[in-house]
Length: 444
Image 1 (spheres, rainbow, N blue to C red):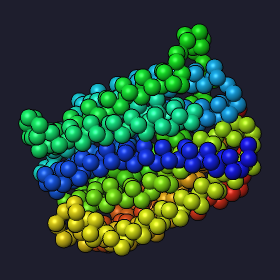
Image 2: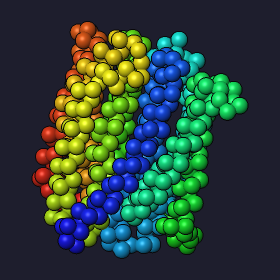
Image 3: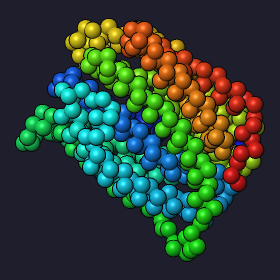
Image 4: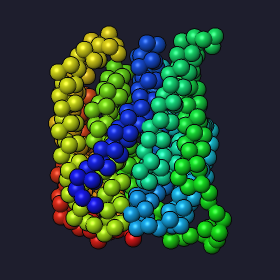
């Protein structure tokens, strides 16, 4: 396949993934924006919960991430039966995992929030939101698997459309239930939780229906008798390191959020506002990497390693240019952007400095997102995991605590530590990509 054809495919894959991921980010950001009209404390409470739910969703991605990578390689190699087996196993395991985690979150929500050090004045809102969204989080486990399977086959438009529908459902639900519109009671944070959980359920139903109609119409029992242990092993070979790397990062962020919570409610609210805004800066990097990794996985399945390497370098360069441009926009217009969310001048001042530091952070984050995800798409999943564990906990957690609390530099100092973590890992992982050691890690 010619280089210009691959680049055209990359564009075809990236645009829908970009729109889908923007809409996914909006799903969480909408709660923050609409609750900011309710109170800063409700934003801080929901921000804490969403940090935990992000960790939960990464647990659900354990098998869906593995399935996406393996499916891309199997499609490249033409293994249709094994493709069906992998997706079927991922759906069953994720459903069982989702139901278990949902039950635990509902029963032990209060204990979990106490462990996170939630302040008493935030506990009521945080508990309501976590109980409702956590109890129905199993829908997200299935949605992630359906969406990953569709994307691995290049059917990226369907998840995009579904996510758009879900955002509309969430916005209408938030408007009605947070503020008591359209004949509904005013429920505040509880209303936001109900709207968010319901929208995720809608997404699961729609994605499931599309998956059976457009991709894999059925899962014949004969494909699973005996149980395809080889495919389960491959899922775990990719899924466990992928999940563990993401859990390490997000768990470290939960710990960091605990530290920020000790500083002040304003620091916590600043982190929540900035994190939701900054997500849109590295959105293009995430989307082009996801689209590019579909092609990289298929090329590795065809054993076209040099083509995979050149494709990776091509979309990495575009990721860096666009991400840093977006981050520069936040540096210039940060005060105006934050003023649209809150009139607290202390939060705005802190947030502006966070945006300045974050420009340097995005250099490392772009390298990390690309190298970690693309190495994983080739089957090289262990190395990024080891690097992540070491630096997430020594630099992102350890150094941020020392600089932020004992040395007294607060949220600003902690963001400097985050930037160091991202950049150190970025340098190490890019060296791994350029070394070519991933060429021996394919699953076909």
